[in-house]
Amino acid sequence: MSLKEKTFNGVVWSSIDRFSSQGIQFIFSILIARILLPSDYGTVAMLNIFLAISQTFIDSGFGTALIRKPDRTETDCSTVFYFNIAVALAFYCILWLTSPLIASFYDIPLLKDITRVISLTLVFGSLSGVHGTRLAIEIDFRTKAIISIIVALVTGAVGLWMAYAGYGVWALAVQAVTSSFLRTVLLWIFVRWMPQLVFSMKSFREMFSFGSKMLASALLDTAYNNLYTLVIGKFFSSSALGVYSRADSLAQYPSSNITGVLQGVTFPVLSSIQNEPERLAGAYRRVLKMAAFIVFPLMTGLSAVADPLIRIVLTDKWEGAIYLLQIICFAMMWYPVHAINLNLLQVEGRSDFFLKLEVIKKIQGVIVLCITIPLGLVAMCYGKIVSSLLCLIYNTYYTRRLIGYGIGAQMKDLLPILAHTLVMWAIVLIIVHVLPSLWLQLTVGVAVGAVYYLVGARLMRFEELDEMIALLRRRKDK
Image 1: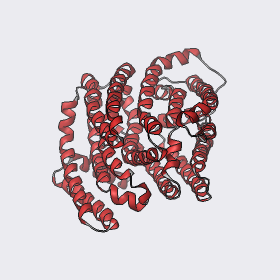
Image 2: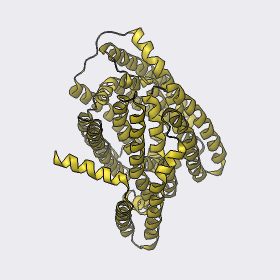
Image 3: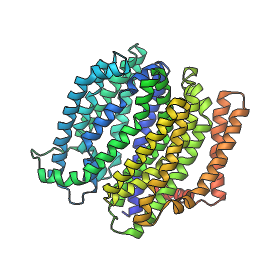
Image 4: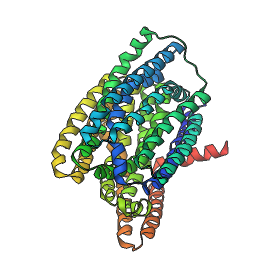
């Protein structure tokens, strides 16, 4: 199987994994959100930063180190397995003991018990971290897709039943724990890998030399990404945090998932050609353009139809999320460009460059956040756009040094897609403002936007559309 076919097969199954399971989760989340209050979501969101930082320590970059290690052994996998469990147990104990302080910090007593329950996700997840990594190494996204769909269906039903039964915020907490536990059980059943009774310090040091820099980078990224929820939860209300979290999750759904599909598939594949600079540069250029061709119109289109979408799907009690979603979409549309540039540093094993970039970007991000906090929630969301655009400069610096594909060359490739996308956004926005019915605004806006974008791409002969059609036809002929 050629590199392109191997990548395409991985993209297909990874897309099924992401969008079937995430689609199911999305449907259940809508049903649950129609029952619960924004404050319920805000209460759970307050714990995101503590859970995310704990999870980052649990992984410590070892998952990435295993994937890119060409001579990995069973000893390596077993060492990572036991390390993950030990760190997970340690952080569970820390969160158990500090849960009263967390509750006091936010002045929400209920958070003490919720923290102690929802932190179980760390322990369950650590038991299957290596199993998931082995699936990624084998580019076996078919198995991952099956597991994700089962988990989404079962846990979605659990959360919906608990919400309907009146358990409130506990529906979200129990849903998260059930999801982590069930995923671990299924990974053990499907992957059928058993760790050896061995822990090698040599193996640990070898992988940690790479993983430690990835850990530091991930900690900075995780802390910064959750800094908004920490600040909003502390200085605003739980309802405001719930509204922001809903807008942010809706904006992240298309951008993060599509980027995640491309990253998850291309990282192990492109790692195999890391010693072929010209081939690597060409592959990255195609991946970047394809990501922009897909994500740009989805994000701007979502921004344009945010009003009817939220009012129809989530009801008017979530209307505070409309304007925030419209803004955040323009920050998240650049996410794949950032992620793909950073992915190159991991393929090349330059975790030192990765760390330097994260330090610079987070300092800049915190400065923007501090400036916008006194101006309110809307200003903070506009600040995310400013930070995202500034990060384009930083993230493309080392890409130019490593493969000669810097910000100038990238923007030259992306500008035609961006211009075409913005015209589509303007057309859809006009339709939404002109039509009287919410349903007409949503359906006609989406239909016209999609037709304009695809027909325009065909007339302007975008090679990304031709490549997608060719790959789909080749897949159909098999």
